[in-house]
Image (tube, rainbow, N blue to C red; front, side, top):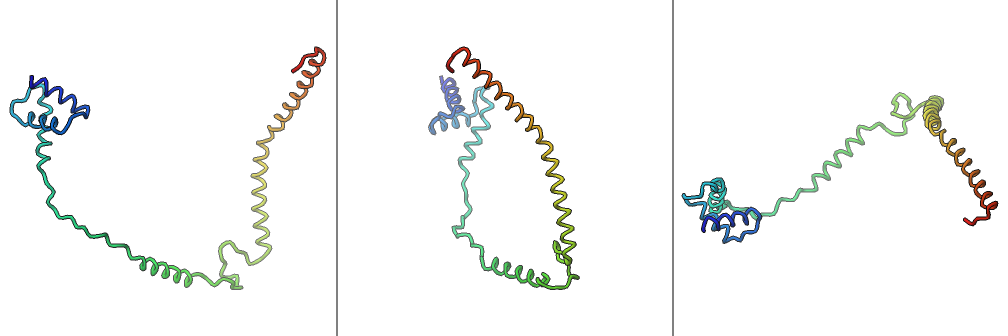
Length: 164
């Protein structure tokens, strides 16, 4: 009878329906030496739970608040980066073309030529895109022929005097 009760408790345990008293009964059963042979594979699990239940945490927990990060160091780093940036950048508004800034041209003709090349490239790619959309004209022609069919349908309604 005890073995039948243990098997029912094991089934409830596997379904997660046992109470703490029932789990304690299972732990005490499996801590014994005489366990049914077909339930031997449960014994290591429940003996582990018994041993684990007696463990205690003995270290002291510090209850101090974490040290907050000091934001003034971020401000100091930001000022240092800005100062280095100002120091190492060339002066804006210099009139000599020897210090060629990226993206600028000294001669207006050079700038015009570069813009002309860029616009020609954009136009070329745009024309390629437009040529792939030419099939939409065929769709418009097809819808126009459908309009003729509507007119034929209207004429047949008039002839046969039917209401839509």
